[in-house]
Image (cartoon, rainbow, N blue to C red):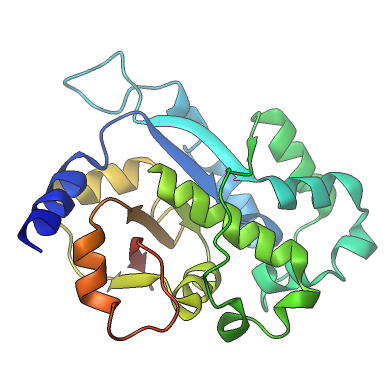
Length: 234
C-alpha cells in the first residue's frame, strides 16, 4: 500500500508536464453554446503558443483528439439522423443542439484527431451505468475510447458530467474534486488547456497505483478496474 501511495504521488507530480494531450468530450460539441465557446476559445491557438514562461519553445498543449466513434458518426450522418441517435442525445442532454455542419467545420479547420485506443474494458458494469447498453453500442464504444485515453495519460475536457458519471457507475474508482480550490500549479495548468473556459468539467486518471486503487474499492465494488479518475468541476 505504501508503494502504491508513493507511485500515486509520483504520477500526480508529473501528470501535467507539457505537452499534454487532450480529448474533447462530445458534450462540448453537441451543444450550440459550448461549441461556440470552444470555437472562440484559445484552446486551438494554445497548440502553437508557449504558455510556460520558463520554457518559451514548449507549448502546454499536445495533440487534440475526439472519440473516433463520434467522429465517424458525425462524418457519416446528416443533421436529422444524427440527432436521433442515443449517442448524440446522451451528450447533448437538454442543451440547444449544435448544427452538425458546424461541428464538421471545427473538426476540419483544427485537424482534430480521432482516438480509438487499443483496449476494451469488458469487466466494467455498463448495465449499471446505462439503460440497455447492448442496444447502445456506439455510446459504449465512445465511453471505452474515453477511458482508454485517460489511461494513456491524457486530459478529458467536458461540458457535462455524463461520461464521468457513467465511468463511476460502471465501476471506475473516482475522486470527485468538484469546485474545491486547487494548488496553484494545477489550477494554472488546467486553465491553460481549457478547463473552466470552454470546459466546465475535466478529468485525468492514474493507472499505475494498483494497490491504492484496490484498497479504495477492492472490497466495495463488484465491478472495477485498476484506474483512478480525478474529476474537476461541477
